[in-house]
Amino acid sequence: MTNEIRDTRYEIRDTRYEIRDTRYEIRDTRYEI
Image (cartoon, rainbow, N blue to C red; front, side, top):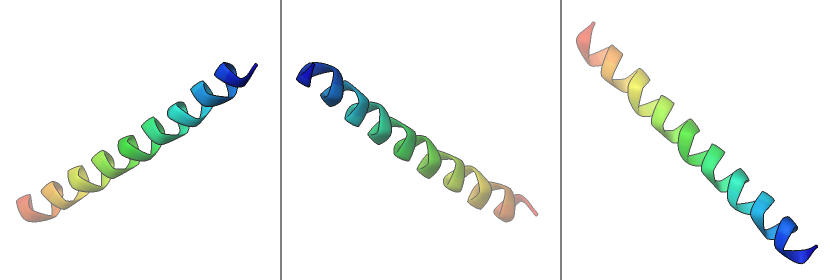
């Protein structure tokens, strides 16, 4: 059971990195405009 809980924690970290990536994409579009 403890291993399953650890896996969910890593998944949450992955989603945080994905949000950071989208922020960089928005900055790129601003420079294009």
